[in-house]
Image (cartoon, rainbow, N blue to C red; front, side, top):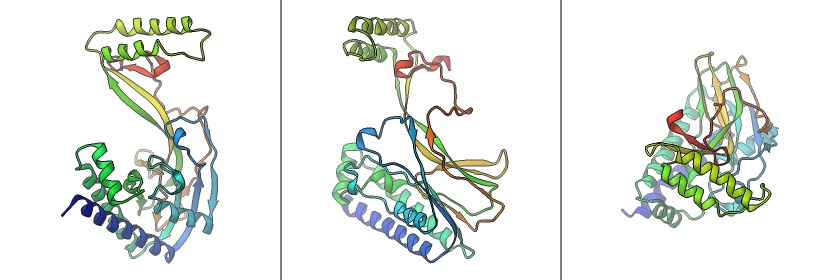
Length: 291
């Protein structure tokens, strides 16, 4: 069986399961539904860490339609890039006394995982890209991977928040110095003149040069924040999952406290956030030996 045929058949099964889930939700007893609409993300902004993100909260039928559309959002469409992932935070509270929706959700997530594993068997990123986009043109691969999270017991609360993501690169002392040597030739609009900029970089190079040759370094650069769902049962029994797709609460009870996704503002300090001590704050360079 050819790789293209395997990919296509696995994806077709996944897509069928998603469509069946959506049709079953349409005839199910929906107790309430919320959708937290985020601004469109442009390709050039995908890896930037924004200072603020406004959220528009929708409810009722309008929210439900957006949630269903979110589960089916697998293709490039108007996004112009297969690297742009639209987040669809939301919540569907629905009765499922016979367990049919739960069984469907398990099957959808199993199909997503099988499709992902099939792709990851392909040797490298370029080969994966070619194989996937030959088999399923315009597919956003990461969108197909995204799990649909759900809960079928009675939590104390289901709340939404923002999770900060980071782009992490580990490097040696020599690689860090090589990177600084290159940056000394760049111009920086935040300093008065090129000489001042070079003096800044030279001081950074001295700081790195003083480290031992075996030092482990890491650049942990903040990128976009992403919605997160926090499910709490007790103070110690809680968990959180991605809010990139609408969360489904099966057989909801009135005692469960339901939250909404607030506007994001980078100035709001999260007390749980680690206070990073950077070797070079400008490039988010950490010395892991000091951690």
